[in-house]
Length: 393
Picture: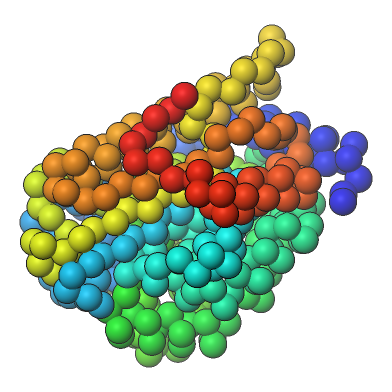
C-alpha cells in the first residue's frame, strides 16, 4: 500500500485539477496556438490513419456513414446467435468486471463473446476478456495485487498549467508490458474468425467519440500496429487533465498532422451501439432470427449513494462530477434497453449495487479494488448479478 498522507495529497491535487481545468479551459483554448494539428473541422473529420483501412468510425455517425467494409465490423461467427459484452469505465471499479469474469469462468457458463467493447478501464480489460478465461489471472493481478496504485504516484512538474497532473509513464509501461506482439497475434486470429474487439476514445479537437476496430488494426500487418493498438488503449484510459492526452498521427488530403485523443469516458461511459442505430429498428446479427444478448457490466454504482458532502469547492465539484457520470450512464443504458425491447434482443445488466466506501483522494486503493472484485465474483456465483432492465434504485 502507498503512504496514505501522500496519496491523499495527490488525490486532492486530482480534484483541484478538475476544478482548474473547468475554470481556465475557455481562456487557454483561445490563447494557445497549436502546430501540426488539423486546420479546421472539415480536415479533422475527414482524417484517417495513413496506411490502414477503415479501422475507426464516429460513435455519432449516421447510418449512411458506416464503414464501407462493413464485414470487417459486424460479427460473423455464428448465424443463430450474437453475444456482446460491454465493459464500462470506472477506474478502480474495473475490478468489479474482473470478479464477474473470473467467476463466470469458474461456473463454465461464460460465453465466447462475438463482440467485446471497452471504455477507459474497460478498454484495459477488454482485450483480455476478448481472448477468454486463459487471461483471468492477468486481470486479477492487475486489479487486485496493488500494482494499480503505481498509476497515482507519478506527479508531473508544472502541475495545473502543464499538459497533465500525472505522467503517463506508469500507465504506458503497464499497457506495453501486457499488450505484447503475442496478444496482438491472438486478437488478429480471433478477428479473422469473425469476432470483434472495439475500444472508444474521445477526439478532444472534434469533440466526438471515436470507435476503434482493434481486430482490424491487429490484422493490418503493419509494423506500427502494436504501437497504435497500445496508444489507443492508453488514450481510452487517460482521464483528461490527470493523464496526458495521446497524440495519434493522421492524414487528410495528403497533409499529415496529429490528433489529440483522451478518455473515451468523456463522451460515453459505455461503448454500446452507434447512436443512430439506437434510434432505429435495425436488428443486429446475420439473420433476423439470430438471438442477440447484450451483457453490460458497469464498473460503478447506478443507485443513489448517500454521503454528507462538505461545503467546500473541491468536495462539491467532485460530488457533482460523480452525479454527472452516473446520470450519463443511466441515460445510455435506458437507450440500449429500449432498443433491445424494440428489436427483441436480450438485455443483461450488472453494476456495483452495494455502497462500497471509496474516496477520490485515494483513487486506486487496493482495498476498494479487492472489495468490488469480491462483490462481482460473489454475485455471479450466487446467480444474483444480472438484471433484465435498467433499474437504478
